Image (cartoon, rainbow, N blue to C red):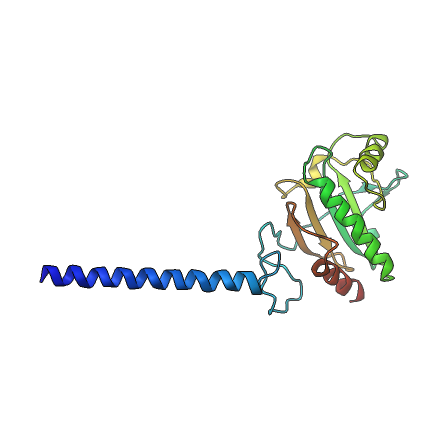
Length: 201
């Protein structure tokens, strides 16, 4: 009886192991074929895509802080009526930020080519750098199209754990999507299509 049970248990363990391997293979194939770069299944249509991916920041963040444009004039996000607003938080010492900023530079180029004018990209440098230092930073990192705004205080990072971070607000000022970290091609088709749809709503 002991020998039979041991035999039976051994077969059961082997079968269970085979089942685990099969399930892992299916999941791997699903991930490779049906998940987009932020973990959203491609065959699911979402109002705002890329939800629940790594680094995803849920919608609903408020942005009450007054900012200054390149000419020193104060404004708020609510002043940008009927525009899709993309807020990018970065620093000059962040290793991933230059790549992210160049990605947004390329996004601006794509938006211009498509005739989409109601999208505003605000790159906010968290720190104490002067406008002159930021211009040098942009030039040395081959960032050509993004507007340069004065550095902002760390309080704009409230609720956000680090940089680079991207926050997307629709034309009504609602925070609809966000992402923390690098590795995202913001000039790629997925993000571009998302912004284009928001711009046409």
